[in-house]
Image 1 (cartoon, rainbow, N blue to C red):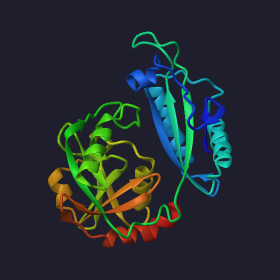
Image 2: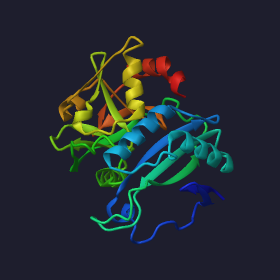
Image 3: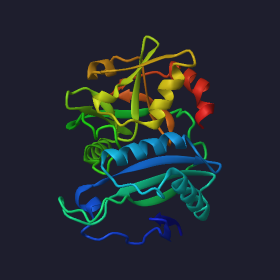
Length: 279
């Protein structure tokens, strides 16, 4: 049996918690954060909480003083211990507004749910079998004040994931409304061309990934050159190497996009340089 935390109280994981009038259910009115715990310690926790609090400000939640990162961190640790997941866990924090219609929310308090799942042994290691991914074109990601957030309005990613499953891809690349590369369903995307590393700028509509930012900062401090820019489909397909980053898997090598193959020589060097700092 596993447990979850709903607004500070512990419930069985299959407990029904919200009703039909909930704005999170009706409108996707909220956001979420996915974090990792290793050996009882949250990984890059300050960055995750900073992104979460920034997102709540953008979505105009009324955050009470007692609801702070220290409180959430304490409750996360308690829940992972109760679920016996503290050795290696994926943690999801879901924030959502309560009941009400579109114009008459009952209040703007950030209701929250914390869930944890165990991670397999070897999580965070570079994948030896590269990913086979495709480009999803049917739904485009917008470029606006919500684009960089992990909101509960996740339909572009849901549709891309369904496409990936149907096509037997490991992941799918989403495009922004300009038709340029945005990110993947669960990760940020990096390309390597002539030993230079590029990733879509935040203005291109990608999620402001915590691991993305960690890589950008540390690549430029460890002898690599990494910059943010607009990336076209042509540039993606003409890259020398491609990798994905997120907070759970750290870095993953992409072997093919639309049946075009890519190597991983530089990616292995990146992992050897940075991998031990983020495992």
